[in-house]
View (cartoon, rainbow, N blue to C red):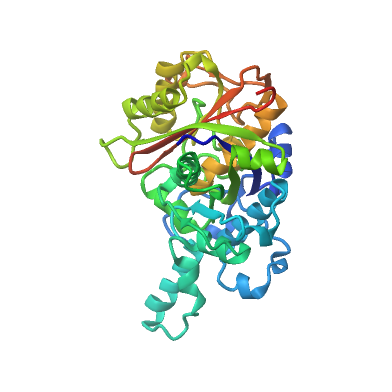
Length: 410
């Protein structure tokens, strides 16, 4: 059974604000949401001082009975899911009747809750100051569980944790389940929250940006010769996946069709990408969709601004696509949202696809010679092709690629 899988809603919370319009405006205006994180000065040894924060507002609109088990990442996800469901014309109380499921991933549970809990335990050698809700915020599946609770989802709930590939794997899993006829409607995506300990995990690996602490808007710099590492960020991205005939019967607008998902593991090193495995992942995505490389008009790259990661991805794209497809990374605008990045950036790519225009990254002033010989976007271009690809490559050697198709005229 091969059901068609379409996207009928999308939502995002990013450092540009609540909602996809704020994200797209930031990209269209070529603005940076990265700032200096002065409140990180307490953490000794941390070299990076840049990040991108979401300014949470009106969180009390979420009733306390739900909010008390939510850290910021769950609040972000609920906000993004609300936007996506509204666009899909699905009311909150309809999800149970639709037997909808939820697949939302993250790198870990709430880093804020985990840090606070250990600080209280280790600081005083006691658990007396711990709140009962701390555990629920720190669960690895906290975001998925909170979405299901808030929206009354009583069907399937999954929470893939694959570092920076988490949300793209969540969408890919949803695609496979609907394609197989096992689900009809799924809330899919990912969320992440920013904490200095999160940045520290990259800092220890010498993977963070440290040369632009006093000029934060100049970093990260995907594919640029002066790139020096990741800028950690936070947010959430949610897509509503739906079986095609079900969506047509409901008469709702369709944002795009997912035609392929591929994921693999490099099986070589836990911290760096393997060019061969990236090539295999993208080629598998093309094969699964019965497409050729020249069919893909735009590749939304994972590129985070690291020296080796960007080089490996550029080499892999060059091997598969030559210079026939436009390429850009959006992380220069708002940093790396880690487990949420695949969903957020796919949602933005769908927006671009449906406007027939693709935007360049930010801070790509001089393409590094190690990343050259692919079609880096330096300015906005008209998108003619109906197909786009989104990549997500994570620590642990986990790779994921999704191909989406524009529905107009199909």
